[in-house]
Picture (tube, rainbow over the protein chains, first blue to last red):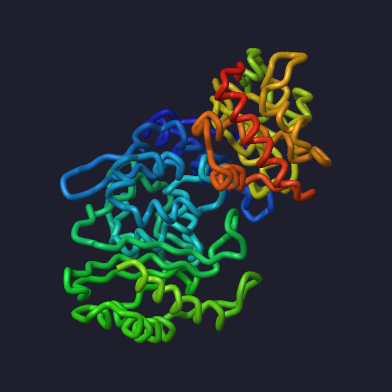
Length: 279
Length: 158
């Protein structure tokens, strides 16, 4: 038996962390409690974050959206600001886990777990999101792309927590797209996923592009060569094939129980071709 | 820890290890064996309960998280001796085979119908996509949720 703390505020949380150094924090528990039961983690104490109001909620702050790290995926899906501003994130949340997992799992948990297959990561990479880390002394923001340092690894110093995710309010994107290929439709880790933002003008020419792939490398993969290949040119299937070839060179997929590397490489490129149907 | 919560409408107070799984607390300490353990990892939905009216996986909840909450298991879905319209529809439509997934399926369906009183078959599939039926009787389960939705819309007590 280990102690479990239930802080109701950040100050309660800091007190709990001071009282139980080495305690692990969790919000939804959909990842940490599974690992603990499997014997992969043996924390001396647990602290759950679900009752800390400061870590919840969605709001507009100037040119940014602030998403509380302890928001569940279901809560985010219900937020009008999320629905209207970041449909690419909505598309990813809708296929994350199952309704039961989405009722428990949180945005912050998905990011701190730092799986290359985490469904919220590719949209937030493409959107250039930042994370806000909190300690008793300060808050500190950094790009999500720097926060995630490897498979299952995030730059979260001991004693700090992920408090919020900050997303620059998207403007000008004409396409916000997410697609995931898994072994089945629900409750499936992604085998390959793609988040794509495009700004295509009235003449069909791509002016901006942001692309991010999940599950094809140690972290979410971006491919500036593929983005550059699209910019200033008429968005068409042959052009997307050209960009897909660049993406296939850039990704570094692994072989695991879900798929082999060559399949992932092929699908990573092919997912781009879908964009021809969306403009 | 001393844990105070409401279970199926009754206030309960018990001494429990704070890191005990809600699943074990409900099944073993309170004898509510309608809560099933399938995978123990959040992938099958057999352990679904309602916490403050929303579905939760009781295998991934610790006792401490239930403090002050209102828990409903399949045993408490309808008053003693009565069936909830979703339970009745599962019987009428032959949606129960071995029955192991039924408590979780029914509670997930209850939450789905509270959110959306008239879901399409596709939305019912999506709403129940976290609950696995190893007998694979999904068609009848979806028939039952559709039937229950009609009954509930017609004003039967829920």
